[in-house]
Length: 340
Image (cartoon, rainbow, N blue to C red; front, side, top):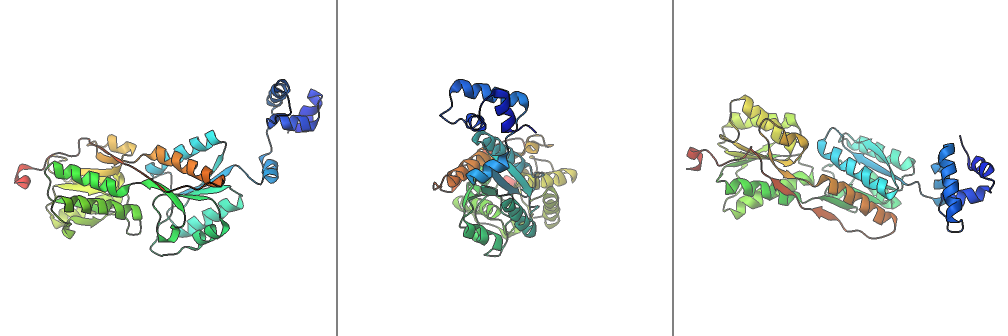
């Protein structure tokens, strides 16, 4: 392992001069800096970040906790966080909570034990109004940004998320403009604020169109492909008469649409389907999916920028990013008989 002392001996200067040159201190000439940096590179010198952290009381490490990279939304967000962190000179320590409150607490404690400067957390939502690990984070004053809307148990932390209510409204208004009157909603987890906000957007759009939510058209679906398939089976069994479906996310929409297609339901001729998220799969599904696009890369970059603001002692306000409707082949006017 190459040490500063080895570079100093090779260059014929003091260890302090090498250290200052590699840190870009102003009292070392540009020529000497360039020579010593080149020599360090050629000799394979790797800085001891642990030692640097002890001196500066920072590690340049950011802890990132998300449910799973199997979720395509978080794949894009994590990629954007990592890229922005690299630009800002930070490294990322990534952990998966697998949507378990116990695992989330373990992940946060492990990240804190690695002396991360701050945390980016996609919360594991729960019905309880308090969560011990978030109370501890608040007491410690650990700079923390939430990747998602805050719930009561984590309301003291700043956040960045999509305007989910607007997204639900855009999806529903699109179907109303096409002439649909019986629009089903496949709802997400009851504890998740993002799912509740998407349902609220659906409800608002119906009310503004002079209608109201028909509980016979609301199905509890969850957030996976399997959940969407189960909700589709329930819709068919109950013969609810829907001509269109708004799903809480793209995975649910794809599971629902796939199950319907397998039962001979034509999309969009018999029934239109709208998702939420604009994951890559949605564009390449059997019937390309109309969906609400989340600015996933912008969300990840914004979260990292907000965390750096907190690390610098600056105040930061919660951010709500606007979604966008992406129209594809899965939506059309309702069947003539239904429209009549």
